[in-house]
Length: 113
Length: 116
Image (cartoon, rainbow over all chains, first blue to last red):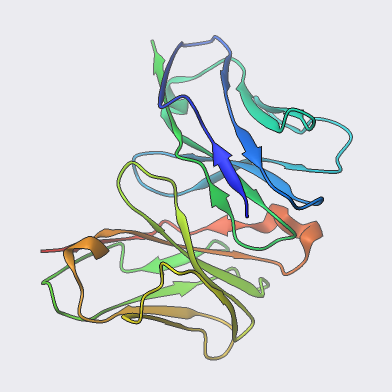
């Protein structure tokens, strides 16, 4: 079984600053993938970034980067240069081998102008 | 449109009625997933299909829930005798059935069900 823990229910960040959203995971599978999704108030789940358990380098996608520390079982999302449009719920999720995702409880990010 | 489509976007129904939702995945994706998301929570897995075969079902999927994917393309999720606890967002996702293609895991916009 897999488990995702997101310990920050809500976060504030000043516009143009960087913010880190925490995610720790637990799994017994040696091969797995970690995802981050953004969910605005409209409800759709928007894919942000993916990290494979055997990837040697941390994933990056534009302003998003994933701080992957395998030994600590953490996969924190870093958003650089926050924008007002980044205000949303953010979910971390894990999957073994392309099956269903197990999500954390999410973090609500609020960007202040 | 190359995304995952869900219909309807919103559904209000009276307790005890049956409802059916539809999901059209990305055409080249052979896997299709259903999730349920209640207010303030992360999505929870319900079931998934590879082509037309339903390969896994969560314990959350009670006998009142049934999902089909008859030709390996679109899928329907039916809830019979709805209860107020069924009120949630129902999300559909699709992907390629290959662990190397997890990038393709794409969600639709969801169907928000309200049972009154």
